Length: 607
Ligand code: GCB
Image (cartoon, rainbow, N blue to C red; front, side):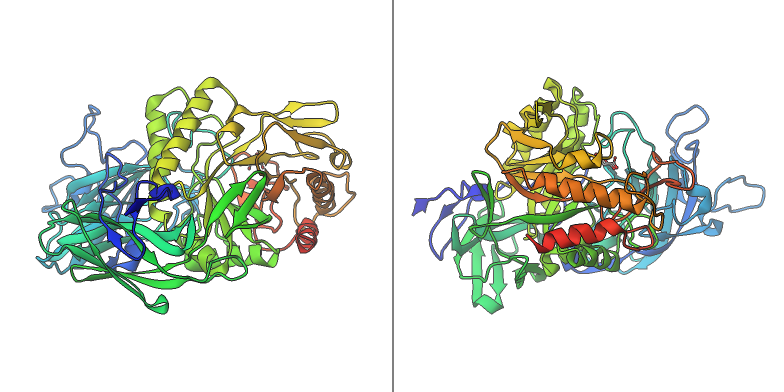
């Protein structure tokens, strides 16, 4: 038996075609039950659909008039038993709202609302004594306090990551109700903080379901190509609950002739390594295999791609070959209707646009996107940069804020660890340089590498020094990442488009560079001179000169211009031009292509 260093699984002892069992760690945050791996691949009852809601700006449903938490808040879903009784809320007669979905675009009067809204859903359920039940939320922006049948089951903070609670003890056979207090107020000590350039869409923005698993269940698994040997598939399994029933997990990949029985150790964990020769996943050939994990009567199905990603000097290597990342940045906003995107159709449309543009890469900004985006990227063959909302000026010297960022990082990695498309975890966007910021983000990087060091680490930076001919990349954070992301708005926020082509970039670091943002605003349909701001011609010219500029950056290994589609932002009030839309999209909010679209598409044809 020999110990091999294999990236994320560095502590794994591998025996060819054999299974070994060791203790592995499961990611968990303090406030919620550890996230079930692949909730969407398990037995589940959907709670999507119409919920009732009550707007509660003063939080009457939570605090009494002395501002003490209510024992009988709205979460009790009380009913008036006699006309003389006073109850000033009633979910039964309340207005309805769709889940998933943000409230801002569903209800005109909530367009700009930030605060508390109570959601309630009545449902009937048939409970089995041999099952355990998890109430699973794809995401709630920003804080959720969750109740089942009037009892609190847990709370979660962070608007873009999935979470679940074990509700076995709270559910009953027959009539049940779930109540969620959703609060999307922006606060200085949150991640993100008060100041962003996107709409603060509130609500239960992604799917809700009750997932049922056996009493002893497979809680987590990880499966991937060994970073050092493309004839080995390796991973780990973690079982939770009463461990007495079964001591084996079976992994089947029928197409590869794999059926392995993995022996668990007495803590219910095991690592494994299997000899196999999968065809490798890549944008040209996004091969996915049907993988089944079975344990204690439960079969969990997943679709898995196998590939490797590394840097080598200034190169990024996918499956051992240098690659140039032809990308575009994307916000999680519905392609034609705006509002927070959440559906498979939304994901398909957005990513299909990226494919049409000639992309092999997307930067999913500025927070973890819904799971459909990642699964669709796996299917369609798009490499992904996935990011947490450590954006601009979060409180870098505040440890509680650090913990929130770390929790979101862990939740993002945990949910998406098995997606071949994700090649990069991004820690931050445009954070002003300081010692506190460097410590904060370096700690995040260390944490990300502990959880997953099979992928690359990046961050989008915008602090550089100027030189005689141009710009020197010298942000100390660049030392800590694998790939340097650079946001630069030559011709829009600085300088003039025609001067950008001659700008020379130098870097102090021998690392790959991705131009993670560049761009300019244009109102689709507005035409004029290329010097006239907001015209399509102005944006086109910025693209032409910036693409000439980036061609001179010797370590450039990709770009993801800003941005695929116009998106809503309260920072953008200019009448008749912006009207609360950031206009840097290559397509309008209605999906109409602007002139710059064709410039980028033609550029990618040459790459
Ligand atoms: C940036 C930010 C992005 C903004 C963009 C803009 O640098 O990273 O979130 O939306 O600029 O349009 O100003």
